[in-house]
Length: 225
Image (cartoon, rainbow, N blue to C red; front, side, top):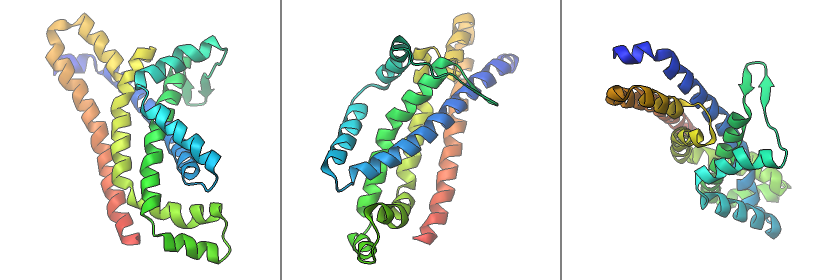
């Protein structure tokens, strides 16, 4: 315990970057995944084809490969994505990692939302069209709100996986929690068990918070169905 307290600043710094990756990638995944789900159920065949292709490509590509393409491929073609706006100060690698994690997770968010959309009674969509709503209005005002309420648990699982997937960002040179853990292990091999336990507890705490929020949302939204 004394060793962890002595290196608390390093551990906190690592998990701060992990939470930053989780928050940014989570927002990207939510927005992109929702748009993809809408495309996947679109009445326009070419759009459905684009959505299906995206999901198949990202779900069947290893996350590490996606991050390496983002971190080392985009700079090769002259794309710089460094963010420095107020409190948001991301290096190029952190931005690439956030984008890669978000786009990868968006494919899973899309499929979870699509399953929720398919669970909504077709009669409600037909009633919405009968009163003159367009496809977009029907989806936005009638179908998506109900779909979102029914997929809280699957979405929580996706975001828990995202929290753990942030550790893959060390392959792109991002100094998140697992990166800092590896540095401590290299310098303090005799304390490996303490280091493993300390960082494991950090990830467990993050997952516990996500699960708690999901449980609260699920209980409240069940009443609204």
